[in-house]
Image (cartoon, rainbow over all chains, first blue to last red; front, side, top):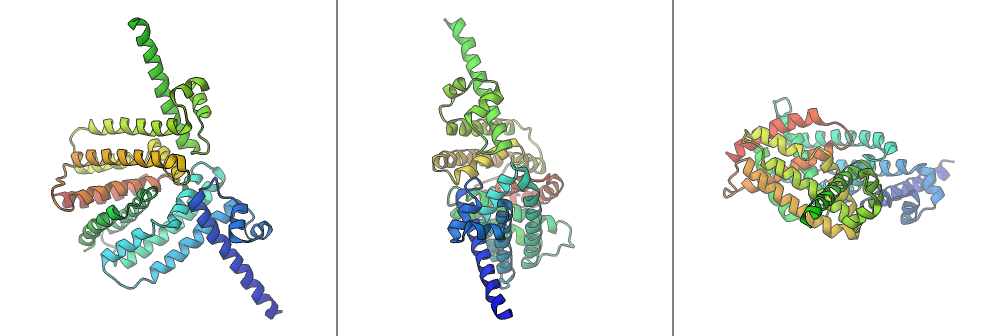
Length: 192
Length: 192
């Protein structure tokens, strides 16, 4: 039986991952209003029935998708080599300028208007936020036992989120690089 | 004729302002998908025909609404008494936690998916952003001729935007106050 089951599980897992990747891309490009299980199934080349087997509701699919990609990003971030703080700040800010941030933003904004999304997305946001904060503290080699250090790092991540928002409609990369360089210096002094 | 015309103009202006206020509230509560000229007209107690006389398209109404409230906020900010930098930072951050920010966020996110909104909202965002930056520099008494000062202030406004986003689904006031207190101190040192 094991010989038959293993490839089946692999296929099922591959289908799930194709659906999650397609869901993030769909959300980033078309927003919540344009994101349905059918649209994602088609994009992933999976039947609607198979998609609904993996994700019974639209909310299941899209919250799982944002969480999956957020975890992939966290893993990539944890694997970064030790480097200077300016490079770390730039890497953290980069988290908020790509398709994952766009997809998450669409989900957050939809959740602010739709009751059935709200509690799930709130919980997801809190979990991803704590995780990102923990990684940032480690990469920045920040000593949170010192007063103010926790809030310094939090403010940096708030700034990164704001930079992501500023990049939503236009390519803000040139301005962003200058802001990141300046704030990385302020942060370095503050963290000691 | 002047006697007849003046009250007519006043009425027309009052109708326009009621529509703009209702549009911001509608956008903040129901998002772009739930925001139509009809819904706003009903909320404002104005006929659909009168609403369309003032704002021929949905895009006209909602971009005008966000711009109108942004200008009101800028005026209130400019009228602030001279105060210490911590109070100024708190006042700037406050701009991003109320219904105007929620409404603007809904419009930005919708514009990222809808071609006919995109150029108008991009232009509006740039204008409001420049205006806010100018006011921030003045209130913070920041000398932009010194290297890095411009980027320090920009980063602060990016952080304020990110704090607004963090407040979208949950009341983030307690954490925000600590972040603002900490970064107001760092900023004060940086601005000299």
